[in-house]
Image (tube, rainbow, N blue to C red; front, side, top):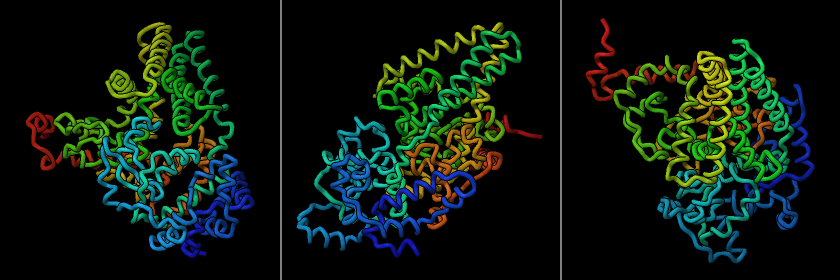
Length: 538
C-alpha cells in the first residue's frame, strides 16, 4: 500500500498501544532479525496508524502524557487541504479566525519583530527569544517562516503547552504540509508513542564508569610511574577521555541524561567546562545554530574556518557570516593556507583544540549574553587548574610537550569525525527554510559506517543524519532507527550517504583539494605580489 493512499487526516494519528508495542519490540530486537524487522517501510507505518483507534487527546492531556502536546489538533488541521481546513473550521463555528499569508509572516523576521508559524498558527516570539533555552540564534535563522518540523525535532511534547501565551491570534492562510513532512511527523509521532525519547538505556552510567576508570589510569600513569612511554600513553588516554566526555556533554545538551534538569546542567559543566576546558555555553551557542542551518555557508558556524579551511569556492567572495556578524575575509593569508589545506588538514585537526579554548575565552569574556556565565567561568577555572598541574608533574619539558601533543592528537580523531560528517556533503548559501528542513538535513550530512562494537568510540554521531533528524533521540536508538530513515530517504529520492571512515576521509580530502586548486586560480581573487612570489616555480 502506498503512503499516499492513507487518508490525509489519519496519516498523523498515533497508533494504538498494540501497534506501538509491536514497533517498540521491533526496535529492541538484537542480531540479524533486528535489521530485518527495522526495514519497516513508512507505508506500513502509515497503514498501521490509519487502522488504529484515534487517541483521546483530552484523556492524554489529563494524564499528563507528553504525547498530548506532540502534534495537537492534527486530525482537523495538519494534513488537510486549505479548502478542507476552512470548511472544517466553518462547520465548527470557527470561520471568524484571523489569517495572514506566508508573505505577511516573512516580514516579521528581525530581532525586534520576530514571528514564527507552527502548525499554521502564528506566534510572536520577539520577547521570548532572549529567554529561549536554545538561544536567540535558531529563532532568528528561521524567523518569518513555518517551523513545525524543526520545532518537533528539538522540543519535547510538553513544550507545546507553552505556545498558547505567544499566539498572535493569526492563522496561516496558505499553510501547506508536504508529503515529506507528513512522513517525518508520522515517524516522530511513532517514536514518541513508543517511548523512545524517554528510554535512554544505561549508556550514561557505563560511560561515566568508563571515563572514571580512564581518568584514574591517566593520573596513575603520570603520578605513579616514571617511564617515558607510560607518560606518553597517559597523554593518549587523556585524549580518549576528552572524546568520551565530549559525547556525554553533547548528549546532555540535546536531552536530559540525568534525573533532573538541575543535575543535567551540573553534568554539562562537569563534562564540558571542568574536564575538557570547552564551555558548554559556547557549544550550545554554536551547535544549535549548526543544527538549524546545517551546511549553510553563511549561517552554519561549523563550516566557517577561514583562514585555515574552506569547503567551497564561495568563501572566496568574502561571504558575510550571519552567525558572527562579520565578513569572512578571503585575504592573501587565507588564500595561502586554503591552497594547501588538503595537506595541512590533519595537522590542523591535531591542534584544533587550541581554537576551541580560544573561542571559549572570547565568548565568556565578551559582552554577549551568556547563560550561567559565572558557572561556566568557574568550570573553566577548574580545568585550567588541574590540567596544567597534572602536566607539571612530568619530569621535563620534553615529556610535558609530548604529553599534551599526544592528548591533542588522539582527540583530533573526534575533530576529524565532526568534519567528515559535513565537509564533503552539499552546501548552500542563505538562511535555512522551514518548508525544506528535512531535505536540507539529508543533503548536509554523511553517516560513518562502522560495526556496532565501535559505537562507543564514535559516540552515536556516526549516525549523523539520524541525529540531525531526531536530535532528542538517545544515541542507543540511532542504530535501530537507521534502516527506517534509509527507507524514508529512498521513498522521497533524497540522499542517504553512509561511508566507511576511510571513504569519508577520502571524500573530505577530495573536497578540500578541489577548493585548494581553485584558490590558486588568480582569476578567482585579486592578485598579490607576495602570493605570486611564494608560488613561483621553475
